[in-house]
Each structure stands twice: as structure tokens, then as C-alpha cells.
Image (cartoon, rainbow, N blue to C red; front, side, top):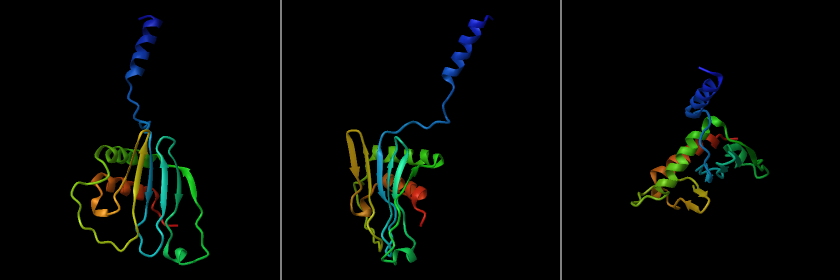
Length: 153
């Protein structure tokens, strides 16, 4: 086999090689209140799934939130790649299924408000105020965000 044929064969193999190391790019953003806490104000996060950058008001531990003088610093960063795939998958499922369920359930909670808002070019949706009306997919997205950003400061 000549050099040209070898090069063509090699290029053909490279073209079908799966790209499992790089997750698919998702154009969209997520805003979520990431804590339902009866004692302290909840944290929140804004995540751009295209750039994978976030801005977060962190959750506060009870001693910190009891201090009237304490003002938490806003955190900026890039999402840990190990968490990216799960959040992207949950975002896409929530977008596909919607954030509201057809039949609401009664949910009694002593915590503060929770919310998830998702956007994309030409699209936006928000969870209902009543937790019992959230879709399973909206709850799963909130859970993935809490796992990634819910550590108390």
C-alpha cells in the first residue's frame, strides 16, 4: 500500500472515532435557588451551559446567616467538568418534558422558596411556585445543581 493510500485509510479511521472526551455543547442557561432552608436565606446559581461559567451566591451555614453584618462574596467560576454531563442531561430532559406536571401534589415545607428557570435561544421556562407542581425532570435538574453548587459556606 502506498503512502497516499495509508494516509487516506488513517484519515478514514480518524473520521469515525467517537468523541467521548468532549461533551456536546448545550446552548442555554439555568438559574436556580439552591437551598430550601428555614433558617438562612437560600443560595442561588446562574449557569451558562454554553461557556460552562457560573455566578453563585453560596448557601450559608446557620452561624453565618445569623450575623447581620455578614455579606457573602459572590463566587464566579467554571463548572467542574465531572459535573457538566449530568447537569446538561438534566437540563435537556427538563426542557424536553417541561418544568410543570399536569397533576399537582400537596407538598408541605418549612423551607424558603425554590425556583428553576431555564432559557435557550427563543425559549424560556420557569418552575411553578408550588413545589408539588414541579415535573420530575425539573426536580432532577434542581438536584443536579444542588449536588454541584449546594455546599454550605
